[in-house]
Structures are given as C-alpha cells and as structure tokens.
Length: 371
Image 1 (tube, rainbow, N blue to C red):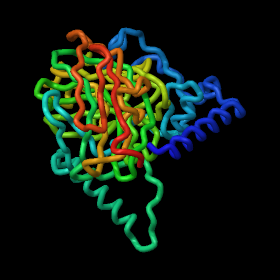
Image 2: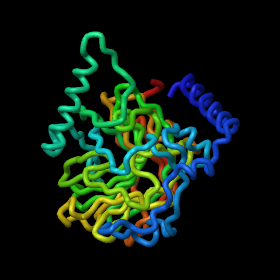
Image 3: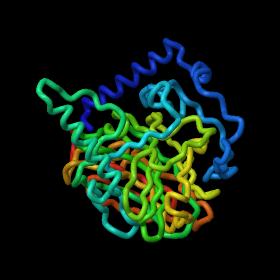
C-alpha cells in the first residue's frame, strides 16, 4: 500500500473519530435503533450449543448504525454494523470468486466452469448484464453496488495458511480485522477459518473479506461460504440460515484494527457460525445430504484472489510476518478434537507466514509493491 493512500486513510479515520465526538455518536444511541433480542428461537429452528466454540456463553454484540464505514464502527467501539439501513434479515446470495486449497496440496484455481451448473449459469448472466450496462454508448461505470456479480475465469489465488489434520467438531480463532489495499482489477483479500471433510470436498468457511463485488466498498465485511462435493456455492447464502436471535447477518461491516473471534461448530444437525459474542446462523446438514457431520481437517488463512499471477494487493495489514505488528491468527482452539498444532506455509513469496506457537502465527504482506 502506498504511503499516500495510508495518509488518506489515517486522515479519514481522524475525521471520523472527531466527527463521532462532535456529534455525540454512542452505542446507547444506536441501541434504540437495533431490534430487541428475540425471546425464543423460531419454531423448527435448530438450537445452537449453549457455549460458543471458545467456551463462553453467547451475549448480544454491540451493533452500530447501519451503513457506517469500518473506521466509524471501530471509532464507536461497536462489534459490527448492518451494511445497509432497513435491509432484510434474509441472507443475500452473492456469486464471486472464492479459492480453495487442500491441506496437503497446492492451491487450486476455481472458475465459472467448475461451479454447479445452476450457479454458473446465473453468474454468467450477471456478468453479461454488467458488461452490457457499462459498455453501452454514453454510459460510464458507476460505483459498484452490492449484489450478484459474475465470477471471472482464471483467477489466481495466493495463501498464507496454517492447517491441521484431525477429526473435530469445529474450531475458533482470533482474527485481526484489517483494511488491506485491494488492487482495482483483483477480486478480494480476506482472512478466514475453515473446517473441511477429510477428502477436502465439503467445506464450511467464515471470516472477513474486502471484496468490492460482494460488498460494494473497500471495507472489511463478515462472510460465510460453503463447498459441496468440491464445488463452490455462493457468499452469505445458498442454504445459510440466519439465526433468529442474531443481531447481524453475513455481509455486516466489521470494525478495522481490532481482534475478533470467529468460530465454526457442528451441533444439532447443522454447522453453526459464531462471531464475537453471538451465534450468527448455520448451514444445515441437509446441504450435504447428511454426509458432512464431522471435520477431518481445519485451516486458518489469508487469501488474495488476483487477476494476474503477481499483484500489489495487500494481505492482512500488508506487513510481512517478520514485523512484530503484522496481522496474526491466534488462540486457535478445536472443538472435540486434537490440541491445536497449526502447520504453516505460504504459496507466494510476497505473502509470508511465521509460527509463534502451535496455536498462533503471523501472516501477510504487501504483494509485489505499492499499487
């Protein structure tokens, strides 16, 4: 990331903090706008575990005003904010590139052609409509809006990862939420945790991502994703159910510059997703026809999806792991599984990884230089 851009971001954050003080933005003010807690789960809804994957009881997280930037959410001391005011609680499916790397293999490249037929056709139509809209005479490209966008073939995926083989019911970790610079032609830069079947074909993922096609801006947002039989589905929906007592849903804007807990745990015929202090929702077992009920491997990693083999996109904070202030994935825990013992590796020399303990490592980098 260039020094100029870092300067603008710093100035913007200062302005947000100053503005929040002068206008009296507080969590108490937001609390009146947030929906009250639901007294009981909806009929027929599975019941989540009594404890979150890291052993604490769930509690309501602090939600900021809808539509705030990640810097403003952080300045308010909130844990998240709805991306848009008045948005539905129904998860919104978004089709965009997503990589997948097996624990013991080189990273794969996923294209539209490898997606399930129905999803691939929908993504192709969206891509064609977008090209037609922006290439018509007299039409200029507008700000990217949230919603479905076509995948792009030939995306390159780069990883700095920790992984572990072993049967488990889930995992959790503290992830540093950053706002890395994303090159204009690249798809995303993200950090996540994932549980997968022993053969790597069934996967559940949760984390934060900077992805203009998925979220419409350069801020970090909460995301979920799953794979079935080695095929990608979509972001934030495609069978994901938002928990009736959750304060937020996938797609929420997250505060930048903080550590947050993310978790996945199977319980009650579903893979449950946890963020901060709440259960957000779940992927029901029926999505895999009841065949994916325990993980055989677990991963925690940074991922960059680029349009070219070499890119200037940042991973994490954009700092090499030898820097003591670089992004870290830490306090890894396993649910009914082996003790954490993450084996770390990188697939690109511009993105590094450095083990600090069996349950913590630093990762990231600036890509091939300033964008």
